Length: 211
Ligand code: ZN
Image (cartoon, rainbow, N blue to C red; front, side, top):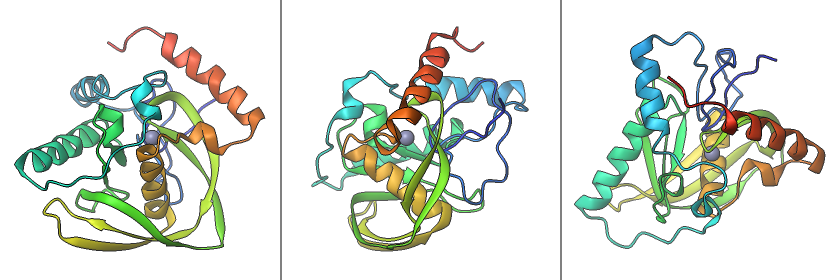
């Protein structure tokens, strides 16, 4: 059952994702990775909290100090996301209760960091696309979300930023913002889909550690 890996998720035997214009992937397809890339990804994923860790259900706190330690934290998150081949990573996923996430929806983009993000506006138009999550191995589910959003927040320096996003970028931002409120994609799907997702999750989490 080959499926693309989405949002922030790692996968072992899934096929590489399509180019993913309207998919949210925290993790891209990993089947054809060279051994070095794969080893780096596995190492990064060991730092990402997985389902069952209570921190994933916690509400992160606003950042008040924009100091070197915040910038170091953001840099480390960006590196982990990159090594994990993810498109987004929230601080709660690495056990830090700060309202911060990093993302890069398209591989040509720089890594963006948003601190204290707030959704100012979201479109009435909704879109359904498949998402995965680095914290939910093996899970790929269709999630409905507003197609476009406007988000305000701050950058790593504390300067105000506003982002208008659509498509995959809007999806990644909403997925990561959910993490800061302890919400997972499992909470955004039907009970039936959740049952199936839990089955896939249990299977993936009981699989032996990647080599
Ligand atoms: Zn996620």
